Length: 332
Image (cartoon, rainbow, N blue to C red):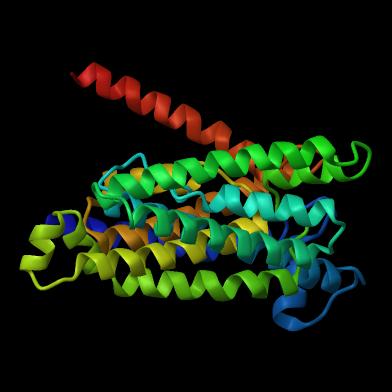
């Protein structure tokens, strides 16, 4: 009862933060806006600055939604993968989806495709990479979990090598800076069209994971125990992998490579509410959304330039795990 009460209290706080933080974020950006005028425009339809509608609807609102959705999606996908592979240090890229999407984006940028073409190609390559990893891993003679991880690691390194090759042949004055910036992770080019394209697979993947959340609890017990309780572990694992993959691919093709969110936030959420996925998934999603939105606000406000958000998440994620390792070492 005590754990349940604490969970609902934390969930309520996260829901309130998820409503307050986007409102605050409307006033964050390089173009100075008056908070009173922003709220007057949103709720009363009146404004004196002619740029307010374009700034809000074309730039800030799509970017705010993208930051929250990507953070929620990556955190939920990371939590699902950590349960499936029974390893709290697993990230959503364990099967190579991020690096596969990165390769697809780099190829599209090399050939001069439009921003939307880059997004589509990144999404397709991310899905293809995970499909190949699952195809290879499912035909191995030893444990499927280990074979999937090994196949994903192999394809991830292959994608990295191919990205390096693309950067090597890219025009250093034009294409190479675009590739480098995309790989850092940023939300500065998010618009309504790109947001809708990624919002659909992310929403579908999140819905599937939430429907599977009690079955994910059984996967953590092992395949034999899950089968004894009437659950087909192979089918559940495949559905969860598909859901987490389309979430990750949709997130990466919209915001680039944003590391640590899907690794750090589920780990932190598990420490707060435990390993029960009925509680872990909602908390991870809300906490991840708030965290990435906060990081994006910092990216837009710390300097006069738009800092790649992947840099900021790494700056928070790496010290977090260093502190975690040191604290565990002291407890022993």
